Image (cartoon, rainbow, N blue to C red):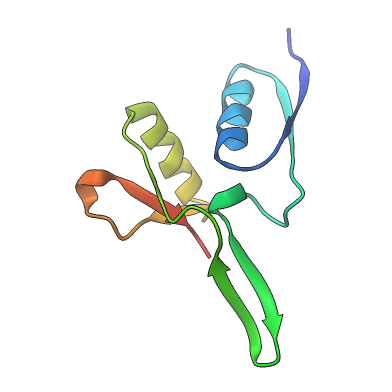
Length: 98
């Protein structure tokens, strides 16, 4: 049976939860107080007298070791929600896309 589900928070856990629910056939709406996805992995944009600046305010990166989670992170990278981080490739570090 398809259910309508609301996921509160578009951070890492909320997006993973929403993806799993959609794959299970449910109608999912993701709600977040921020202007975009990412939660603590997102970047802040602030207007200054010299123009807009962007800075990271949360976790610097996260590691994806599980093959299923790695596939999910690659899917997030396609629309620009994440990008490979500065860590060596063997650590599979990912960070926010400003």
